[in-house]
Image: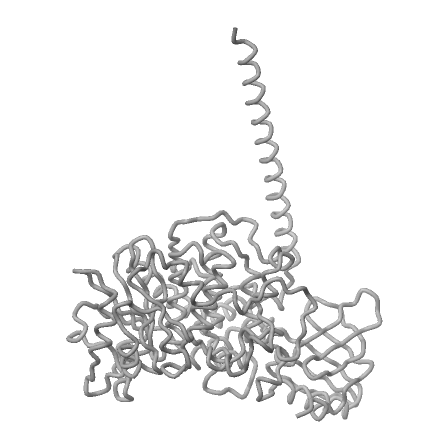
Length: 549
């Protein structure tokens, strides 16, 4: 298919653009295969370059010969274009609708994007399972890398290499995979160096109504326990949902078959409930007419902060089991690709200082989201404005980033990255020139040949010029476990995401700049103090030498 077939009117003059925080500007609107571009001949006017893949929905209005297109973006921005001529307006609208809903992944912009920067690091090879395993290999002698999933035959949503107990061979893993939802047998998610306890993750066991069991599954899970120790299974579904799953062939671990494990049920919502929550939240944030009572009532009715609290509470429980109870845990819901990953990754941010650094957090996203099979293509296909909802859209990853922001806000000196880093990840998960978040799992990314045909997001982010914008000036390495508060008073609406297009951040930006300047000035003064101390010590030494006979 040629993009030209979808572009009925490639260019329109005298279009007026209205967007947040900029004065209205008149210019020429151009449509390309991947971008909507508005450029003006006025000096000092910033061009608009908008990826079609960032467009969530469009509305059309007509007043006489003037047409208006309102573009609602996946990053929650709303842009208005006033286009002279009804025919031109209709043509532009239908072209945008067609170009923003392309079915084929290989027609998306990452396959056409050519970087304008020097590629210093190949992000596709920055966080391979082998490299991550190497970091712990000296400590985890009882674990091994298995390539049982080399051709994605055992589990289509797992990477080719996974970490499993050394005592379990590949044949046993195949049997366990047949007993777990989607072939997602228990694998190592995190090793706690302090006491050797681990977090594992998997899909639900396929016990069904007959209470089916799998000896290899029991052996695999028990292989992670120390003598005389108990473990915890955290099921991210309420008990009644887990029980209902048995009727569909799913289920949960029976106490009789897993006597050394205590099962805990937590309730983390998924799918359309989260999607509806996001829609309500964004709608209330965009309503500028409401009074205080109505705003607070709409915010509460969205349930967004309740979902944040549920996820953080479960992550704190998981971290507590490891660090304070000295117990290993297995986490799963139904598939093990959504709420499970939220909990495993947040628990690591609480427990593991490396996950709070820029590279450590990137490794976490690779390991616990991309390689672990979170279906980004499905979950991030639409955002808060789209009318045609499919079953699979859900802001699971955005909720995770919001949880990280809540912890970052409570521990502002413990993270190497700043809020802009989290916002950047949200934006690229929904629309990007990079191939990192394309596809639903490693198997799909392999078939699409993303490593050969697209650029990795990490190749761009990890350049010094970009890192300087994403680094937290308050960062001081903190090797301790950090325990976030999940009290309702401690959780706040993430203004940097949900209110950034509704009110200017000018004064916040100025305050941030001032803080950076003060920190820099403080460093210079500290350096001067150290220099003067050294000089004083040298003078005192010289005086001592001269006085001695």
